[in-house]
Image 1: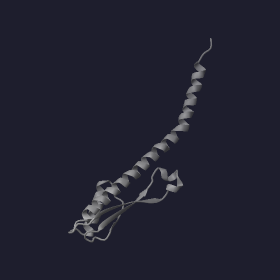
Image 2: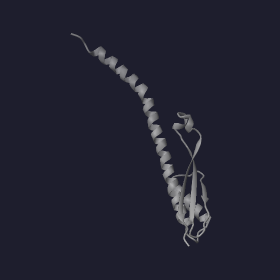
Image 3: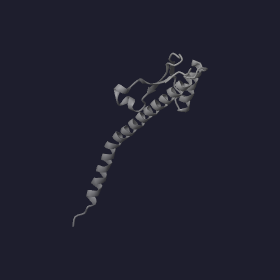
Image 4: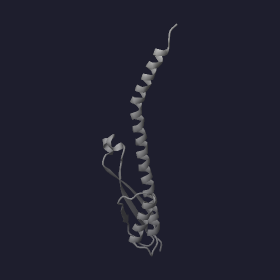
Amino acid sequence: MTSNRRNNKTRRGIAAVEVGLLLPVFMMLLMGIMDFGRMYWTQSVVRGAAYEGVRVAILSETTNAQVESTVLEELNIGGITDTASVSVGAREPSTPVDVTVSVPFTFIAVDNLIPTLSGVSTISATAVMTHER
């Protein structure tokens, strides 16, 4: 009669080696997914802030400072506290007004793994609406 006891101990060792080899790969994959999710979240917040900024910019009685204040407030609500660049286009009656918002973005986890993603990237969005009379 043959014992399976020796075979089970060998299999436990193999499972530990497999976990040791695959766990770092799965952790890097998970961190990459989280980093890209954070990038898409930032992009969505920047687009929303540009949209809210242009909604304020099309009103006749508002100033560029009020537009910038609205954009920065929307960014803060979305959790973006980095320095943002806000550009308001010409505000002539019956012409399109554009508001461009740019925010610096740095990948955290993916930065060391993929050299092309290292450093600071810029996420920007532009919203355009027609100025009211």
